[in-house]
Amino acid sequence: VNTDDLIREALFRQADRAPAPGPTLAALRRPRRRRRAPLFVAVAVTASVLAAIALTVTRPSVETAPPATATTSTAPSLDASLRYGPEWLPDGFTEQKRTLDLENYSRTWVDEGKDVDLTVMPAGSKQEKAAILRSLYERSQDRVDLGAQGTAKYLDSPEPTVATLVWSTGGDLLTLRVSGLPDARVVVRQIAESMRSDGQGVQRVVLRLATEYPEERSAGNWTDRTWTGSSPTEWTISVAVARSSRFTVVRLTPTSPDTAGGYPVRARGVDATYVAGAGGMLVVPVGDYFLTIGGDPLDLLGMRLAELTLDQLIAIADTTEVAEKPDLGWFGSR
Amino acid sequence: MSRSFEDFAAAEVTPMLRYATVLTCDAQLAQDVVQECLLRAQQKWQRIGSLDAPAAYVKRMITNEYLSWRRRRAAKDVAMSHAALDVVGGQAIDDVGRYDERDAMLRRIAILPRKQRAAVVLRYYDGFSDDEIAEVLGCAAGTVRSHISRALTTLRAAERLEEAL
Image 1 (cartoon, chains in turn orange, brown):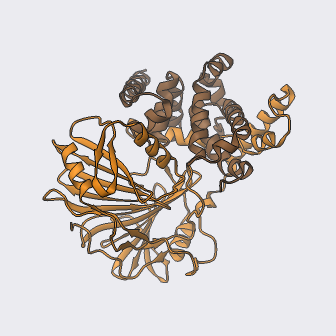
Image 2: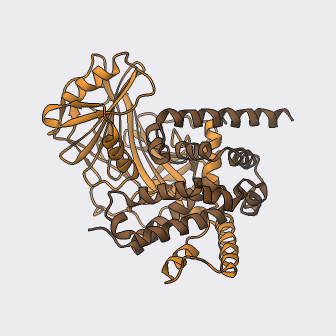
Image 3: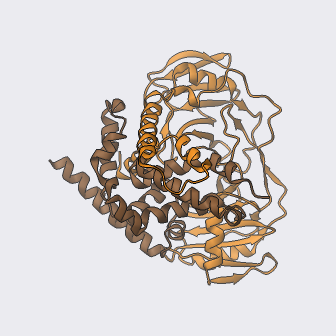
């Protein structure tokens, strides 16, 4: 384990030791609550520590498991309208990644180690990152006129090959970042000036878990969808659902991951393969593709994979909605 | 229309307690800091509740409260004590070697200077960029990079030292 991963894992483990919220909420409800009596402190602390330990020890591993019933098709659409996209990019860049959470989406174009990232946060986003970006925008004095799109501002850059522009258009907050180019400031401005806001594209959700968290995103509780791929034949579509800082990852790929050492099981009414190991991995053929639950956690802030039993993995596989004919045409294109 | 303070507190108290526990390395201190900040937010809710992201504002209050001189004096860096970690450490689940590594790292993080620790928490727990951390800590992005660089140097050196012993 490298130091970065170990730091993340240590911090998330410490977060699990947080006291229960009850005493804090109770204190807020009391009319005179400025100072707590020493006895209350002792009782509250003891109770919260005991609660924290009890939660840590007894937290059921099924918290990330799906409910017994399958998801219904009446769930609200999670598809994202891709209104924004650049009309101009330097030669060689192709779109190779999209991410989508409850509010935001981002698109990434890549050319041999050089990246262009566009992140769009909708008007009224309550996410912390949106508030921080708005604040950074307001503080920056390094402005550039984008014509009809208004005024963008550069954020401080750690090096000349990286440049970030932030601007607001129609209430939406856009962040455009270029990295790996010697003239990053110039390029990011050119791309921003070519940005369209009337795109008709839609990013349709391909995977939908029964355990997705419908509420506002918060630390430890979120859903992220990622599409990565360099061509319509080499891609991974994944959804990660985190609850209480433990996450479950489900991926769809055109080829099966390595299942050496696995054994056959049944899931979604077909023959599947279970590979034991860290967190376990279940691979299920779905049409022309393969659905994988668990396994390699990818790059997800070092959060811990939920420790799921085979039955829970099968339950997730059985209740995961997989869209037919996902749109793969954009992988590796402009 | 902004939501009520009660709804806000009910929804945000758990992530705030988690963040504060990571920041302070001490569940008791975390509860104290979060409660203090929420009480202050409650009194000024008309203004805070109308902000774009009241949770972000309160989180900054928590960070500042932790970094404030009052906490430094009152806590006497009690959060740094290994005893505090052991008390809330859930030792019953410490029977896997990997978990011991995490606790060892946590102890190293706990002895970092406060601003370095806050920067490390915002980077590795929240996944914030240098700019975002700078905004929360009220300093320049370059200072953030310096905090994190020094923290990582300390953590890696401590790791090597412990491995050598």
